Length: 397
Length: 170
Image (cartoon, rainbow over all chains, first blue to last red; front, side, top):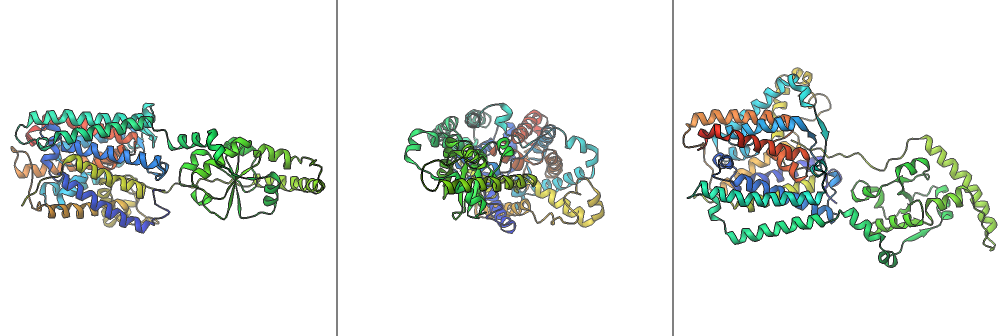
């Protein structure tokens, strides 16, 4: 599951990846005509909307690709860097950059690309950029407070607007296609002889536009991967055709006391419930955590049996089925969930099945109750075990 | 021979794939202004290390325990942009020392305005924590609120002032 930094790709390797991605970035920018300041500035005067077309198409493509990869479980969006919002600085910075765009005719990325093919005005732009950052750095104390103000964290735009991710994706696509249509009309009017859009093949463009809008409609109705799979494993037909290995409270108690390294108790209850009572060596995992890649190291070892615990039988089964559906192997569920464990082991239940093992079982349960209760009490005094690891991906300009 | 530019939608699609590859492989998007900042930080640190360490702006990037600011993802990526842009210009026959501008502006004024514009972009990108690539484009692709705000602010102010600077371009 992507992204592959930092687990699969080391810091050194990542620099090579950066270089390769940069080469592709520069190549596409130049091929798009972004190495021409006159073309870039054209977006503001109506004679050339190349910037808008390339920019919006790229944003829609990358967004759609990310959403689809996440839906099919290939990309963990939680691990992708989302640039945090500093509301007022973002607006002021953007306005200043708008001035820079009109006056300079480039933005930093395009100026570097244009300088690479010998555009002298672009070299001046890059030089100016260096001086600008230097001036900003030297005068930093003057606006330090403003710079750090209105920090809202890595918020997402659909949350800010209070709509679903899918609906926002559709709106963005619809706005982009609408903008393409209108700007093409404006461009042909402003520039009767040499508008870039005169070369377009209208039919192909209409088909592509309709296609991308249909994708947007799919996004509206596409549930999150989590909602989709959770619903799937809860359906009656799924439960009938899929089975989970069941571990009895006695077996689990035995293996806990034995401190077997081939057992990992995965407690899927709420954090509050986990805080009240946690089995020794267990990790608390929430359903949403299963859809990221942070727990992969804990859950993917095939030699370790993952004993899934919910509050009761049903919760345990659903969670265990979900783990299996996500492709994890060697998954088991605790029979009856934690409440059964409590009433069988922690408060020893008198075995009364009438067979000759009852006496032995009762001795075991009474001993197990003492030992495990002590283990639980000891663990409580130590640091709680947190399954989630710190995120490491850094990003930003 | 000078060849034509790519269809902008196709180019946008490819640019989107490059951005998607960056997100999928490395968990972060594209950028540009960050490299300019790294160059400035490295230069200040090289010329006046004491000043750099004391500064509240440069201070967090330099000093003991910090990697050289030039050994960063964004600097390597921008080095790639230089190479990629050059290769594309070479293939399409567009390698040429030349300045571009509107029909009513002299080359020297164009250079001055380009430098002023670059400086403004450099300053603005610090406030917004990124430029058109890093804040606006990548921010939009990962659905960051900041990305959309920055994009609207850049293009909004651009359109509002375009009329007053029309002599530069038309």
